Image 1 (spheres, rainbow, N blue to C red):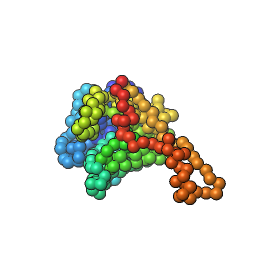
Image 2: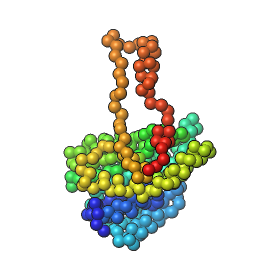
Image 3: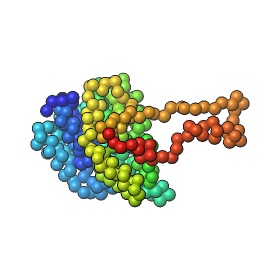
Image 4: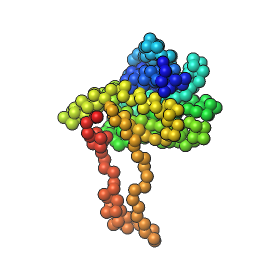
Length: 304
């Protein structure tokens, strides 16, 4: 196969199904040789299908692509090293890391247990660090490479009952920007994508209200295959000047998100007391305070 990624080697985590599978297949369609990584667990992290990665890799090979399966976990440093070693052993290099693996442990905050919080960060945030860090020396040595992390509008904007997931996804934004800044001199790039697509990661959205049911109906129209082209672009040489950014894909739309910057200020030459702030701050900053909205409240129009 030929395409924008011809000659490159990609690792896609959580690629046994859903968005990850669609990305792996899309990258292979653009000429990449792909390490399909998945440990074959359910949405909440229980063992489900240990052969998921091999099945996707077999499907890619049957359509003329090059791929191998790898069932190592991203949540541990030692096993993440093995994922990168799989790429090197089979294809001789690594050019693109796609950090897509994830689980959910949803609970309203006052009922969330520490192990629920930790489990989600272990896969999403620490997993993204482990694999990116394992690939970094190879990117540095060859003076090229790209990392694409999956964040979420649940973290960028907000959602109920997902303090662990939101913390992980916002942490990934900071991690991505740090990688982009630290590795820029070695021509290594790092970007985030907040994908909108119907997959098992969003299939757990409650549908108790008419608004929630309408939201889910819209999501079902957005297939995972829509995400792959942006990932392929960000992993290609054509994206040489694009790093440290946050994108989103929503059906046929691609968004560029802004990032936190100061928007208002107040000054008092003699300094502030709590009393002064009580008098001034609510009125000065009130119109600019970010409301407690969910992503569905902010991006509420129908997918294009």
